[in-house]
Image 1 (cartoon, rainbow, N blue to C red):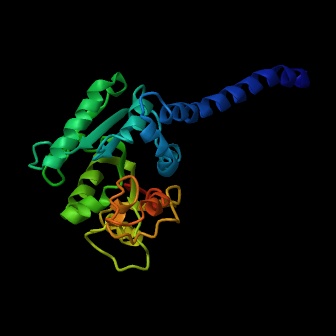
Image 2: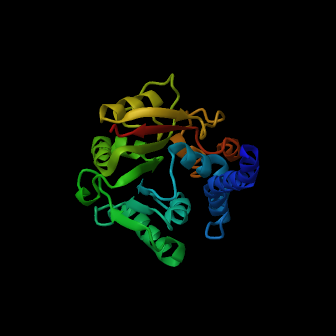
Image 3: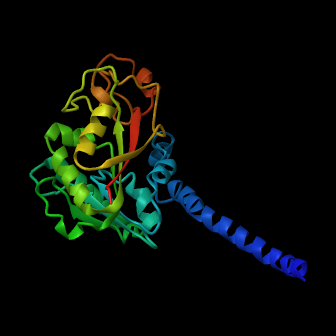
Length: 273
């Protein structure tokens, strides 16, 4: 009798396991469709090779039902991925430049981002807010975020003397146990640490030290975005290589194109519970 019950239950159990397996694959399949989606330009899709969006977001533990803050999204390369991924169940808050902060660059970038958001309904649910570190009042977002992400912006805040303000804002926005995900151009570990990151490269150990001093806990490091071809010692800093390619006059452009995009560290922190 017991054996008959087991036999009858087996197909049902098998179906449940199969369903669970298929459900687990949905986020990966969904992401694969997004990163190659028609809403993205060929130019941006090509950069997947160096920026590894699916693997990076998986490493940070980003799920479709999360509230995610993207700091200073610039032209929206990662917004193209995050917006449709979070649209159904989660929320994307794009903390962009404050167009009224007195910088022509900030205004131009923010205007371009706003236009991008308006041109495609895939971005309808993106919540774009002003973010001027140390100035913008983000109190309404305190304790709201499951994850706060920054892609290649640490050097900007370090050079402007705003990193402390950024880290303070991020800590407040995150829920206890929330993730602070950081991707940044990596300096040569043997080179002298530049607290202002004037070449656009940041010493990995120094970055960890500063972020942990702000109360975060480092939980993992990934080499997903590493590029051993990048020596981080170029004449015009990180902007010498793609995508900027500010190659000195008379230099061999092909040499720098062959390097690809920068070597980057990828760090996962949490706000302790």
